[in-house]
Amino acid sequence: MNVDLHTHTYPASDCSRIPYRDYVGWCVANGVEGVALTNHGDVDDNRKLEGALAAEGVLLLHGSEISTLYGDFVVFSPDLDYLAGFRALQDLPHAEDLDENAALVWVHPGAGGGRSHSAYFSGIERMVAHVVDGVEVFNGNWLGERYVAVAEQVAARLGVARTAGSDAHDAARLMTCYTELPDPVRSTADLVDAIKSGATIPHRRATPGRRRRLGIF
Ligand SMILES: [Zn+2]
Ligand SMILES: [Zn+2]
Image (cartoon, rainbow, N blue to C red; front, side, top):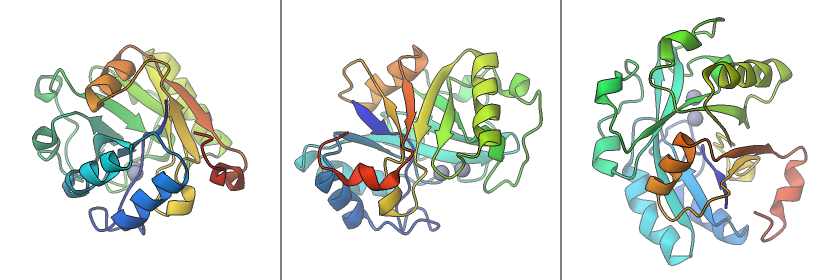
């Protein structure tokens, strides 16, 4: 399954311009099988959208993006009550606070923290290595060579899963980057397993216009 592992909706993410009806509509119109909703410290839209998407045959995967002094991270977990405990701006979680059924992906590492305004510096990966299960190597907003190079370097140094997500704030940008999950994924728990076992293949689309063809995901 090909899944966009980094998306935002309005109003749960006030920076997004995708109301949840448009989000469902886009997924259905484009034959999306699964998508991860990763708003900033807010899972309200995950609760609202899960049933609506399931009714259309689209699997919603749950995540929450947090901004820390080390950069931005998405926590994936099947447990929405657990995810609801994370905040848009907060400390990097301690390893002992991370549920064993959760996976932590360091998103756009080269771009630093979106809300914390932290900056990446070489070697910072050593400080987060104990909690990171994956690194987002392709982010739809940060596809410049420099950002991709930093992310690839960090992923290689940490020896963790490589993921991709659009970080879309507009519906037209959904799936510009996505992660191929070769093993069957029926739930967020399966996604967490895939990340922890490194069974993820990141992709980016060079020509956004092509993604509109039905059923190509
Ligand atoms: Zn971010
Ligand atoms: Zn984001």
